[in-house]
Length: 105
Image 1 (cartoon, rainbow, N blue to C red):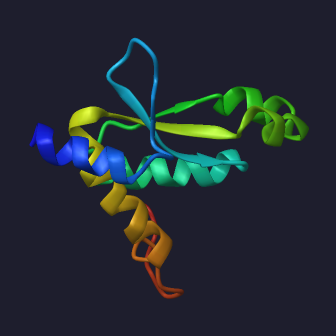
Image 2: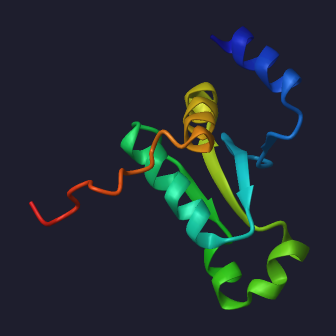
């Protein structure tokens, strides 16, 4: 598994490790809501994703481009799963139909 992860990281240089941590930046969003949606999709898929700089971006959205936006962080052991969730999110697989019942349980 470690060898597959190393090969995947070499093929995806945009994924960066947080220095001194076992966390990797898997995605960045200029809109905090988009990052929160992706984090929710990852949580629903069993991936412990966290957001970095979310509150800073909400304080002043004009800073978002300068600071790189909200970062979605995942542990190294979930990198491949997180990429699959991001790809599914991009394809619209997490979207609800217009007639979806989202009422209270």
